[in-house]
Image 1 (tube, rainbow, N blue to C red):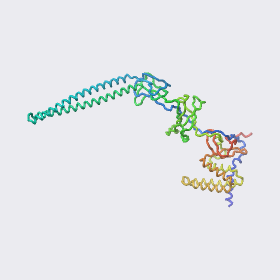
Image 2 (image 1 turned 90 degrees about the vertical axis):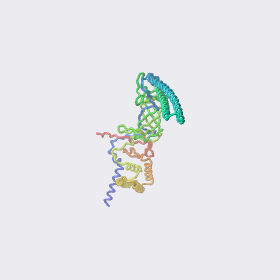
Image 3 (image 1 turned 30 degrees about the vertical axis):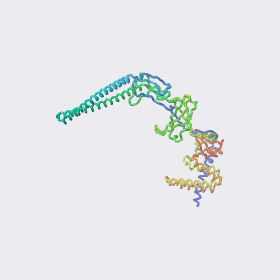
Image 4 (image 1 turned 90 degrees about the horizontal axis):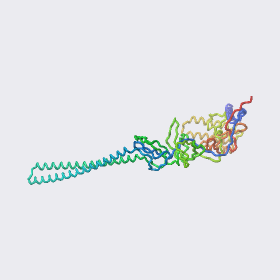
Length: 477
């Protein structure tokens, strides 16, 4: 019995030491200088920062399907062009020679067809004569006025005439097919002649020219690029590479602010047009391309500029905010290995304003709960129904605390737990100075920006001074 009482006294003393850790060491920290910052009302923006190249919404590379020498250039850089407008010419002398050759081949094929048709007519006449001769020989044989040999000769002549007629018909068909072939060659030559005239496929502006007059272009497996045409420079897009850690926060339509180095004081606006799902991996860093559309009515944005982009995830106006440095601050004597669950429970109990008797009663309850929770998690690691056991331990803790705390304190404790679960665990802590020593205050965090974070609830109010950093002053000699 004495041993049990001794162990309980040790547990109570340990937790009491933890609860008063900073008050009991205040004397040792007399030489610590705390820098504070006031909690204030203001605006907060949550941003994702990136950079990307500015490009036209639609860009077309104009090439040549033919090899040849550039004989004429009709446009230059920054020239405005219309759809179908002639912008360059290739030397067409070789193509024109092929065209004349194709025309001559077609004329020859047509003459050959006429010749074969004449041969077909002659073969038809010879066939008719052979048929009549064979009929007469058969009639004479019936009257016994001729011999069997003469009939056989007439039959043979008939078969020869039929074969020649068939041959003539085949030659006529071949001549017609040859005409179609020559016509196709002539059409190809005309098409090649038209392709020596390079025309703009769309209305826009020439933003790049890669050839000069007299330069030879060689079209083999791919068409050489002669010009680059931007369809409409009044609308531009930015291709920004976003880290995989931030890509889940982005969606179509989000507002974007960006600047360019050419006009560092000008703030441009755009919106997220597309979040592409194709990942890019460079040096084991995974990024995704996000397309941002921007208005360029004044023409100040030029293709190729680098945009420094801020994608606005959320914005809150006139809210209570604390510096992010205050949320990161921890006293030097606070154990870095303290678990999130223990921190939250400790913060909730510290904010209940317990009296001395309550602190003595709460200490063993909390120590027992944390020990049982740790043992249970180790024994049921990976178990599918572990949550049931944890819920039972939490219910046991609530029942024990309910017997010690007042009704208002217990309601405050339960409310803090519900708020934590509802926010998905978005709780934090800041430290304020009380009697010259740091005091921990639990806060519920809202929207987070680069410098400030929104705080919810009533644990902090405007004008409270939160600790952002600490420095040690040299002891007097």
